[in-house]
Length: 463
Image (cartoon, rainbow, N blue to C red; front, side, top):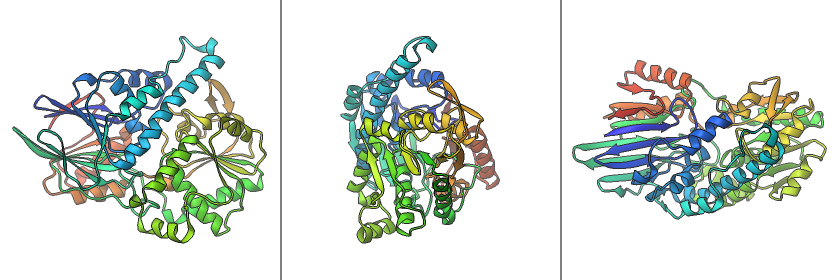
């Protein structure tokens, strides 16, 4: 039995891990790689394995860096089933189609506006019809329901507490000569976060594939999160500026809106217009309402007492393109929340283009920013950033708040590993930049954990 680390190896995007045993191939995740445009296009377009020989796929959750390249997988010949939770299936039904539409719209815009700067026209990886075809191969599996996904391979989903429907994948493999339990963490959530339940602990595995996004970092305490957010809002309101919030449409937007709802109810921030400028966020928020079974007790109580956690008087959801464009001409103070979370596509780019050169405004970063993305360059407060191929001076205030992160930090990860001990023989650290994975690997070694590896991209490892 061996593993091919086809993505999210020493980086945080493009999750893809191919498990091969006894002539069978099982793919864990098939996500978009996000980074430099040319490199991203090359890696997403050319999968490092033949999709036609993959027998089945399991999807941990709906984030695009884990699910976004499924239509390419199917387009290039994959014919097996894609197993995920019901909430993940519902989310992918809108997110993959939206991904296709964004690719087509961005390609059209760049080809029209920057034709003289391009070596060749931009071509989308897939279209909406490709996404719909891929969705026909999804099948759903509830948490805690062991199910055979391939002969001799039983899959059990546990709640990962990261985003709606996110799962820890427990695989019990009983195919001679292989008899072992492999656990893939997907992305682990944090304990005591709003909306979702805490991550569960699987039965002790033999092999653990563990994310390490924040393997050497601790998040700011959640106790001060809302106070810090209130300070950012009130400071920008005094300047009559705009607050731009690049946000992942899934989970981060809903958590952020929930926090704004609580601050508004407490009258800690003024009732300025708040716009969620994302058709995808609107659709995803509707899906959240369909899955209260995923909520924690606090959120269910809020729902009972206060009604919809994701809606209040001065909050406006924007879908129409013309309404989105009109926001650029509207004076502050106001807040715009828009995708994408790493500022690599979507409506946030248009708002940034119109706002980053004005000192009255604030760009509020509330999610992880991968290397070589526009979001990372803004978070690093570069003096100038390139948006739609045009360099612009970064004059707006930049605030980074990691307390909203939906990823487990170093201590959360240590706690998870410690509770997985028993028969654990090998750990592979994935979904983390090299410094984070290697520092966390050293910490695990110091704890007496045997055989901790940080695989290279494209590496085969026998297990």
